[in-house]
Length: 313
Length: 303
Image (cartoon, rainbow over all chains, first blue to last red; front, side):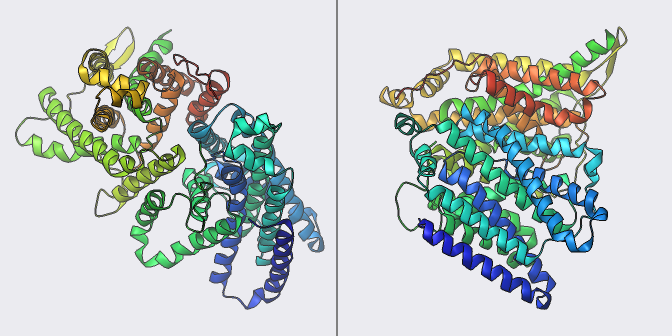
């Protein structure tokens, strides 16, 4: 685990890279650029889920739901105010849309975090899964966000620079939160809830904090996604999307930020490399999950064999 | 009043199917304490086995007929019981003593594997196939209600299966061993119960019920496709939790209740669009206010 200083260094390096990258953006091939932005969005999703599933040892299967809440909120906000704002202020509007999306998603996170006070392990998993499904059903029936046919013509504001700067901020925020004195509580809750609460740590508060923070960043990722793809449909945020993010966290090793980042990049690139085997892609993917669980449940990028990886439920 | 009775009949038929599936979830949860995500895919495989077995049976027995349908159901049930045991042997047995989360994720992986393999064009293909008419179907018109013979049959078959299951679990040696394993695995092993055999048997039994549920579901559905099991599977899981997971009468009760609630909600115009979300809303409410379920016993965590 990195120290707080290390995290700060990563933040600076990340933002510097993002600025440099956005300077050269026009020279990039559009296809590669799209994939790079996908990588950035997935990094934000995986790192934020890692706070819930990895560091805090909860099990959420509804991350795509938070992403949907943030994405739809941000997209609707941009669509409504786009015409009223002059071009020069568009970046500000974008930031406002992303922040709003994050905040509404955080509110949803609070809504899911509260049931998690009473539930553990697979019960919590199924509740978060149910929450994701409810979001999907609600969105499917909301005419104001395009219902089942989807929300179209979202302005294309997401750039490589924005994505990677926000990814760096997410990594920094999660890493420094967990590595702070306060943040040790997350790991304590994940290791042994009863022992933690006997040491004066309030597990409920930590769990809710984890859910709200994780949901906030997932909401921001949703906003980036919306302004990147320019189209949102409820089917894009189904159970499978949540599983994708969970697999990134597991592959990277629960609670290992660097591993999770690497896993997010690999799992975004993998489908592109497997394009010629498109028919077998998802079969390979599911076998990968099973194989990983059998051989290395602690994740590929976990070097030590401490029991951290397989958080007990 | 007529509307109410009609919805009641439809709800019972749907609820019976949920109950059959929920029993499989709850039995596996009882012995292994994890959610077998692949259960919903066994249901789908049950419908597909019937789809592929039917043409072969048709050469020997006339279809649609009761005898032909029974033979087809029996064969599909055996196939699925085998598949269920195979899944347990290959995927879950090696992980028997691992953290629950590992097993849960493996179960999701197995479920995805079955779904995507079946969607592949050289297996079943992703398109919807028309399910053969296995039984002579007629609609009875009683007191202004329309009762299809299929719905009656579903309720009837479920009642028989529930009785049979109750007999197996409460009155046979195998059932006693199953209850012992779910009560305390280690103590049961010390008493000479062959744990692996019992768990295998539980998977076989649960998968057999899922296969029958799948065929009954397919008879009511417009067609079958590799993802057909996902939605009823999730609902049935909710039903199992609603009744108290690990509790057999609870699963049956939860299934019936959920079927009724969904059908009634579907009949109310404002709610019908949200039908898919109802099961999950119920699930969240149940877990908030009575996490052990309607018939489940609350457990106290000891340190």
